[in-house]
Image (cartoon, rainbow, N blue to C red; front, side, top):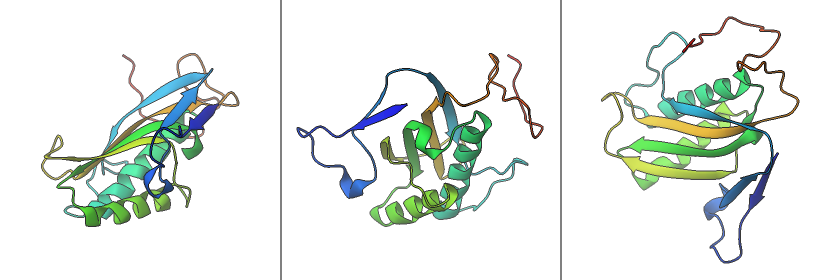
Length: 157
């Protein structure tokens, strides 16, 4: 699966929230496109509220992981993009992530970055990442889990 390393030549991870390196020696890697604070109906959650948008974005990452048989521990790397970042936003955003991931913060290689804007003026948070699909996942060659428990939106391209 994933091996995490914090080399002694690097400063310890700040707050114990990440690892410097995440190594995959075998397995399949899945890329998670940037997730924003849209619910399953495409409605924005938490307009103007960084914490609310972060929680929905992390819930979307969790749903994307679940769709391929993964969980938070399978995250190899993730990046959190924050519009208008300021230091007092850090803890509410991480707290939102802990809530979205059921109390388990995915400690892996990560980057938290302040940005000027995202793709739409109302979007304040975007989270993307990479995950390692566990061998126990029942994925078909087309990335679909079997049996499908719910209807999912899929691209055929």
